[in-house]
Amino acid sequence: ALALLPGAPPADVPPRKTPLDIVFTDPDVIRVGADFADLDPERIVCGVGEGSSNGRSAITESPDNRVCVYADRTDGRLLGASAISVAGEHFAHLLALAVDRRMTAEALLCAPFYHPTFEELVQNALKDLCDKLRR
Image (cartoon, rainbow, N blue to C red; front, side):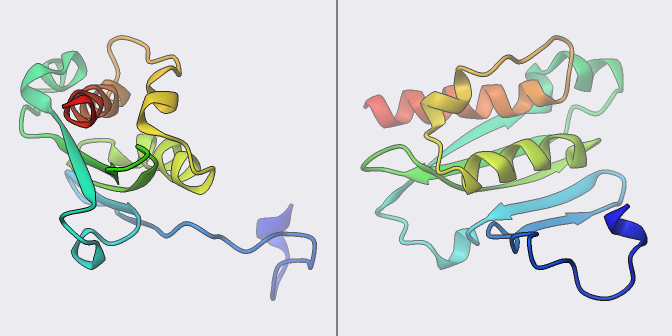
C-alpha cells in the first residue's frame, strides 16, 4: 500500500541507510554499501565469487557472472559489494541487508544458501573473503 501513496513516505518509515544501486541490464550491475573507490585499500579485504564455479550460472550459460564482497580487515564487518551477474538484483537485497545490519562476512556465511542459485556466488565470495581474513 505504501507504494500507492503519493508524496513522501510516512514519518514512521526509516530512511534507507545502505546505498543500493541496481542497473537492470543483461547482466545486471549492482553496487551495495560503501563505494569501493572511497575505501582505504589497506583496511579492506575483498572476496570474489565467479560464475565459472556456480551451478546456476552453468545452467543459464552465464559463466562471466562475478561478485566482489568487501569487508573491514580488522573485524570482518561487511562494507559493500559489487557484481555483474544475471539476476544480480536477487542477491543485491541480501547484501544490502547484511551491510545495513553491520554483519560480518562469517556471520552471513552461516545463512542458508540453496543449490543451484545465483546466491551461491555470494556464498563463494564470502568463503574467499573469510579465507583471506584468516591469513
